[in-house]
Image (cartoon, rainbow, N blue to C red; front, top):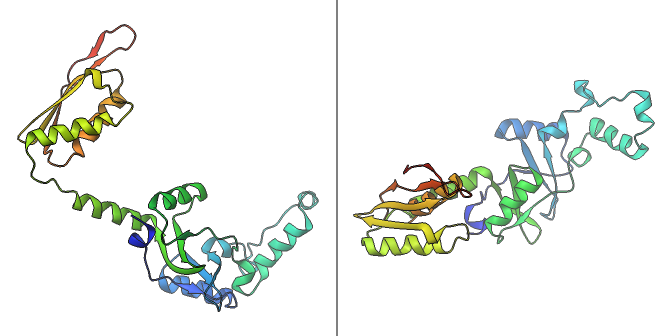
Length: 235
C-alpha cells in the first residue's frame, strides 16, 4: 500500500498572509490542532499549530529570560522569539521547515517519518503541492481494513499446515529443528521446545496469521538453553 491509498484528501489550509487571529479562529471552528500553510501557487510553505500560538504577547505568555541568560542567547534567536510572540500574520509564526511525504511513498516511509519527527500527522504532496494528509488514525483504519480482507478462507488442513511451516521457515529466529505444527479441522497445535518466551509468542503469531487457522493450542516446552532443564511444561 502507498500513501495515496490511505490518506485523507480534504485538507484545511491557510495562506501565509492570513492573520494569527484567522488561524486560531479556523482551528477552533474545524476542531483541529494545526493548519498547513499554502501560498497562492498552491505550494506548501509551512505549518502552524496550537503550539505556535502559546507564547503570545496578547496572552502575557511571551517567553522571558533572565538578563544573564540573554547574554547566552544569540540576537538572532531573540529576534525570532520576538517575531513569533508579536507577529500578526501566519508567516511570522509558522514553522517553515515542514516534513512531508509524497503521495506515492510506501506506508513504511510514513511510519518511519512519524517516528523520527515524533509527529502524529504528515502532509502529503504531489509535485510540491498539498494533496492530502496522512495521520496515525488513517494508518489504523488501513490496518482494520486489511485485517477484514484477510478473513480466513476455506483450505484443507494439509495446505494450512504447509503454509504455517513455510512462514516459519522464513524466520531466522524460528527453532525449526525442534518445532512442529499439526492442523486438524483448522485447529493448529504447536509442538516442540523453545529456549525463550519470545519465541513462543512469535510462533503463535505466525500460526494465528495463517489463513484458515481457527484456533491455536500451545504445547511448546520451555527448556533452559544451557543446562537443558525443562523449566516449564506445555502452555
